[in-house]
Length: 290
Image (cartoon, rainbow, N blue to C red; front, side):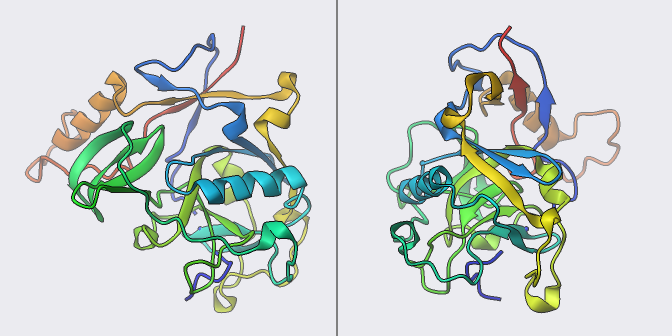
């Protein structure tokens, strides 16, 4: 099935937002604090979704998304294509767009060189030479090619396109299911969901015979509004922090995952285990100022 400005159901909450009350502090060795200008507040019929954008690989697509949000383009549109175990997609649907922000973008599937702030988690990883995170977003690198890309873990946000690479315009999708890693290095990924996956999970599904497209979307599929964090009143802004992959707690988690050093496990014959960063993502906490 071609990914034609169209597109995912997480079987379990991999991108959990943990509630916490803490004093906001600058980035440090353990936590990354996303700025409001990189947060997207998307309101659905059942509640809010917060997305953290990244320009690590696809800066033009990220900026296009920001510009579309600020123009109000996505307000009152729909997640019109939703496939169980795959993606939820929104945008202009079949409507023909002729304005400047609908001109096709040049593909940004990979970027060189490898970022200095890439934190490696697994070498010889599934689907990539090396996987880890770039400022909280799952990523992969190829040292021989000196290139990097963001990967399709649950919660990933990317632009949809037609069969040709340079055809993304306004359509975006969110991975709401199993990690479709076959899309890596073939789509322009711009970030990930920090909070609100349950609301995306509540979206009506389309008929798979029709490619997941909902012929007549209702309010249950509607995007009520989308706002960039830096345009939201300060008293309504939400503050998050994302564990860095170097965080001692995260390192303990993946080391335990490799060795199954837990009383629950009895058969450890297949250890050490390979770490799938889509499954073992760093923690996300919502914090608030005192």
